[in-house]
Image 1: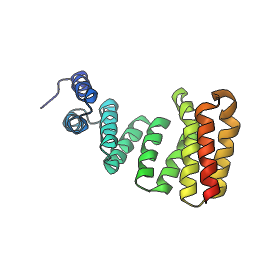
Image 2: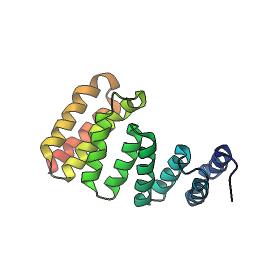
Image 3: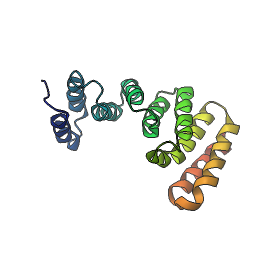
Image 4: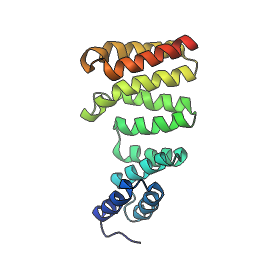
Length: 168
């Protein structure tokens, strides 16, 4: 099937997303990309669908293309880094989480992912045996985020990582 516009692709994807029919979304996006190969919205839908069906290798490939097109969007590095974690590719994940931290001031959306970037970098660092790096990341989370984001999520993450730190 050939799509006349990206809007039509989006409408069709929406129908299947509501029912969590991710394999159908993958088919739609793959077809649509033959007409719109650099459309970031279609690529984003495709990478999310791959993640949903746990096809992390394909999600990494698509996320990499999104990063090449969009540049400097920390969410894309977060998404790809998380896939690398699922694939036990800790060095690659660590590199993506470093990019999140490096990009924090380059785009307003990026700031929202900095805390998560530090947290996941700490996790990847623990998996790599770089405990001092993990401790520095945790300290950064404590210093930068505990006060102004409230106790909820930050305190939970810090507590979890304290448990991990004690167990290694």
